[in-house]
Image (cartoon, rainbow, N blue to C red; front, top):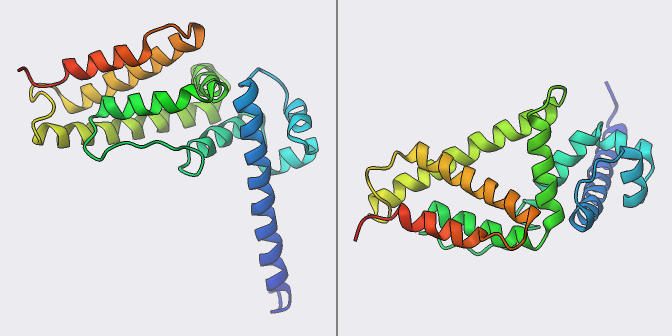
Length: 201
């Protein structure tokens, strides 16, 4: 068992490690925001981030783990400035998210890369990430649908879970179209979906 003199040093080293990992992650977010998630090696990314390959491997283990960490951190409140009213419908929330995403197309491409990888064999980290993200997003959106139905803002005959899945599918599909062609009517299509989900009259 370590003596009392060793414990403060251990805590200090742990805190420095956390800070160093965050520093690397912040720089990686900048790199991916600028150029997207081109299929490249961890070694090449380490050079762009400005650290050794060993340091990147120590903190993230694999390229896929780094990509997931970058995407999750880039979506943390500290990195996103979305203003969404509390009474916004699920589609209005996705429209606000799409507007924010347009400012960092590289991170949108990173997300699309992770989802595509999740569909292939041999990518358990990406699969776990995408599966958990979709499940969590559908749950949160379905809860929002129920709340909006109670307020009379969304049609009552629409199943909340089905609406949630539809909104996610529409948002992701339109985002992919926008990546391929920035003239695709992403916001307009989402606004149309929002109108279709409103009560008649």
